[in-house]
Length: 193
Image (cartoon, rainbow, N blue to C red; front, side, top):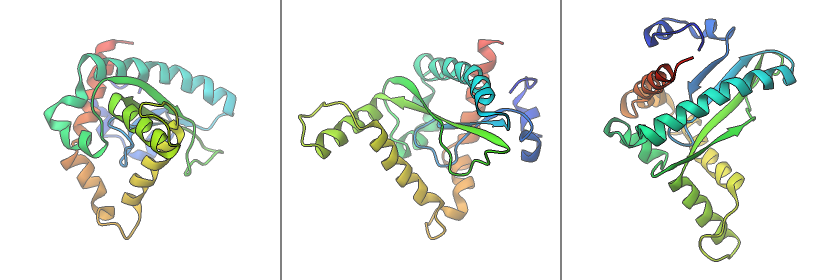
């Protein structure tokens, strides 16, 4: 977020105030470790896309440094989150998904930013090979794998699910997502403007 040099300044903001500025936040039901969402206040779709592209370029640089150089996903404090999101191995790329069920197209433009690691690639390949009776190691089916992951994490939000009412607490205290946000913020500040 432009104009924020200190994570504590961001913490003091009310969520309502963020709706007027572009912002990236960690998803509380992450598909992978670091799964985030970019929200841009309403503009026309083409202008929003151009603005999003500039921010996504910076996110790619931050994630590449955080997950390739610093190996944030291998730190002890994030092991439970890495386990629940099956995040292991080498960081491969950022999946950029222009999809949101809760987007108000007159007010906002949303993009999911999903870090993709070698363990996810392996799962995707195994799923695709099994589904289509192909030799192990066949590549394909990324969208199907994402759909399966989405189904899994959507269960956490369903009212009858055990975690539903404790999800924020679990995300911040058990999975250390607030600490992960700080870590990613520090990486972004170390990269510069």
